[in-house]
Image 1 (spheres, rainbow, N blue to C red):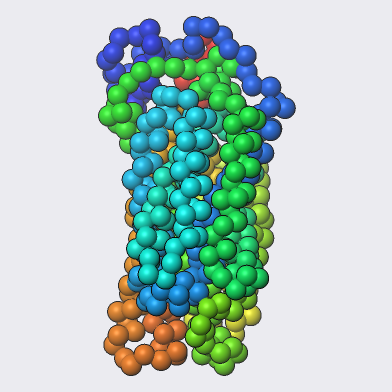
Image 2: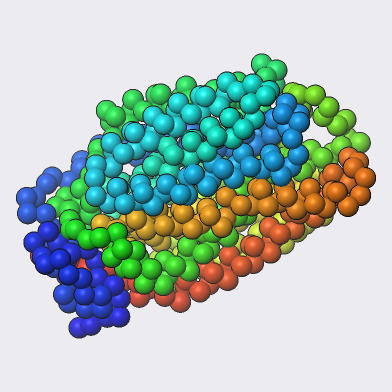
Length: 487
């Protein structure tokens, strides 16, 4: 039987050639390791999940702590919106540029050691970011870029470890739990960052919390997290192995149509969430200034109320949305084979009217804005666990880290790497067309944010396209791993 699809990695005992298109020949390429290895015990797997979730929480707390004190940083360094947006952009750019490297390493070497090395870089540079002085803004930019090194190692490899600890519905649940900590960590980043800045009167302290907590995570990872054999969950602990070039890996991955379309959807989601997470608290703060609810921030520390509220909304909608999305995925799996990308499309398209209303109602009612932010973020959060699960079941185990890295690179390159800076740049360009006032500062940011719902529509279309191919791609991987395990 022949399928027009790339073959998985060639086994160690095979020849070096790869025949893209022959399904029968590809079965040998998923051959189990010669020596059977015991599967990771369930108790140890659950401990590993707890450790990985804790680090993921800190990962996203650190990422959005900057946004929680953005107004303070702008006052401290006397910078405009576009320059402030660079702080997130340089971080994401270093993150995405290094993701392919860590994906390559993660498919070939000890994943646990790679993550430990990355976390060490993250801890040092994140702590260093909290020591910059008023004349050292570009040093802060450089350190933020280096923080992306550590996060690239962790975000690329950690989901593949989970994929090798669990299978089926249990894996979906564990992936859901892991990805719940993205919005939870993001929300806590706002709350803890703003709280520390207010408590100490200095925004620098907001950047010191996660490095301290990160030391605990590094210790737990080193002593409690295993490095399971690739494909161990699908092959009852035996694992799969092979050798192929990075070029061959990429060829295989890019021929998976559902992966390509869902990665485009992830890009749109990253653009949206990156822009909203970075600018929404500032936007709502400016809206309240124009309504006369609060005075403008002249000197740091600025009023952290919006960071608190936005952080709380992000936490709640993240937990509820990711759980709801994962639950819908498991419920629809046997009823609607292409249900996962349809859930993602619904979340993206459903968030569009909520974003439009949020942007336009902010000048009239802050309470109404938060209501629609809640529903918009809830719908976007449906996607987090589902899109991760899609990647794990349409890509063979030995190429998951590379697939994860490519998705991260492309998604962030055209997503949240550019969206904070792009929106800040558009806001500054609009602001320069009239004399600067607090009202016009709010309006310019408002008009620049209108790009977000447009991107949301594109994302929904991408996920709808992915739904056309998902069943076929998933079935191919299942057949390969099942026959390999029985062999």
